[in-house]
Length: 385
Image 1 (cartoon, rainbow, N blue to C red):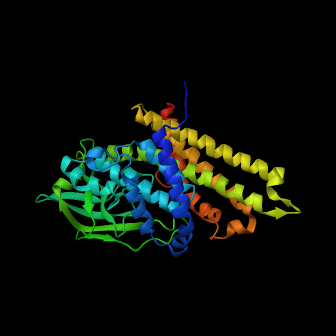
Image 2 (image 1 turned 60 degrees about the vertical axis):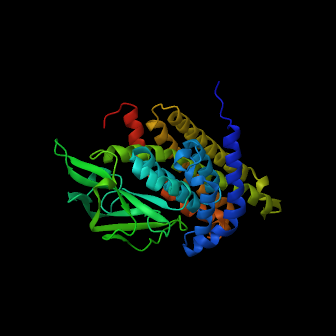
Image 3 (image 1 turned 120 degrees about the vertical axis):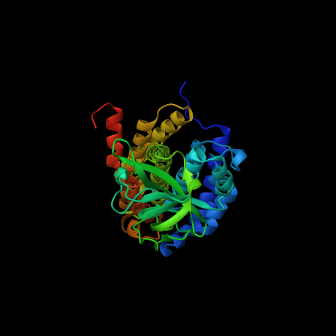
């Protein structure tokens, strides 16, 4: 029997995060957003709640939950604000999970307890100024010299990379040449404050304004050889696995934004009057809201399916791509419709839907563009590359 009901534990978590988002995040996030300021108190509160450690085993200081629990938390946060949600998403799927999946015992002992507690944030440096979707075009290099990696290059658009809590950035770098002449790509942990590691000033962004995003530069930056994460030359495979897993989480963020648009519009149409009636009485508005709920619901089912396959240990690459594509489409379409329902008020940054509209577009780009998702789906269907 197919059953999409949440377990008691998952439902309790969802309700807890929903309450936090509505009572703690919603009243203050607009001010952080307008100032483009990182919301340290909210992030620290999420750390105390154990959200950064949801999928981390208890032996490493985590909550001992599963990845689906993280997705539920992300959806509830994104129903209110995407900057806070993406801080958690990147902190776990791109910061915690590579250490948990591929780290040595020493690396796990060093980083996981603090990451799980939200005391430090980890970042993942993949994208470069000259290459986004074409991750195989990595130009950053790392050369072994006297027991140290000497790193040179740059990374772009890296989330959680320049906060006061950032403990390290895991980067991809070319560490040699494969027998077939291709690039040998490895992943290396670079702690914050390492000489030669420079964090540029934060970007001025269209959306996600209360999250942290920077360009990074490495100029003869030296880290110990043991900072290699996983097997040398397996960096490309490791970040593909990381991104596949992360697509399920980013899909949950998209679903949260799409559902948040419905939430806000339902409140608004009960208050706003036009031509002598509340606008919620007009069929044109009702149909628009029905379509918005349809998008959010179907996208939610898509990420539920991908997450369940992941947890069962089944192949889920195509389902993760479908979930990411469906949720980003739903978020963008719902944000546009919500702005239309709000009219002129929807164009104001102080309204939640104004922020939702600004935040939605990046979901079609970050952690794999919509075009890349379609390519992945086509390949999984057996179509030629």
